Image 1 (cartoon, one colour):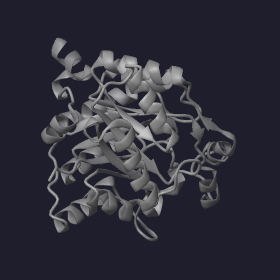
Image 2 (cartoon, rainbow, N blue to C red):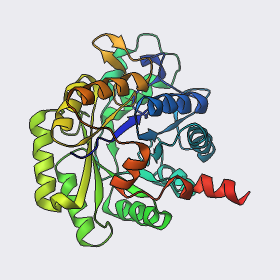
Image 3 (cartoon, helix red, strand yellow):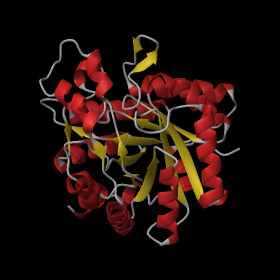
Image 4 (spheres, rainbow, N blue to C red):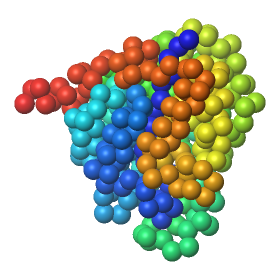
Length: 315
């Protein structure tokens, strides 16, 4: 049986500060949440940055560098940096920190879509910050842009940096995009797919949709040419994680995807969700991968070869 890779996505750019007092906002808080998740069993951590004063999603490379160096100093977990960013960032801003920091993994969203989170605005009665409700409401009229041109550009600079793309798949058509990029040599197998279900505008989080995506990937890409993981938003998170584990897949949890531990019970950290996954894995007799084992399974370059480690060695 292959070992289970657990990823913790610790803050993201979907949830806003008023939705949970436990959402990490500053570089120290984001790093601390990632470290706790790694100590709980996550082999990978997926990071976004936020403005430490307002909690707004940020593309500032200095914030990312602070986050990743703090995580690396305390844990061996592999780090994935987002290129998803937020609706207010340009494509160039979304790519900047990955290009500069050269992490082991970086997200690469595989198609344009309606990425709608405007229903969350109704959950905020007294916002902590003025930007939150307008930010959420504006997604009702927003398309998350990921064109073939930008997909090729992102994949090319990731290859040059030795960074493995984590290919985010929100809908079935995005697998066709991945297949095309493989056929043209922009991507090279083996690849790593991150199925993301439950976002309004993409495929909903259901067993049928996950099975369909996995079977489609096997048919289109070849079963031996990819590894895969599942992220499921909101209340579907835990049951869908159990399904993915039963199918032999890997899983992603964390406050980016779900603010709750149980109905009406806010999670105090991403680590609490990782601990739930560890409990399920133990019950199912599924072995959990260490960071070293995850690197081997995914074919990552190693912690010593990321940009911030090389910079530190040179100094």
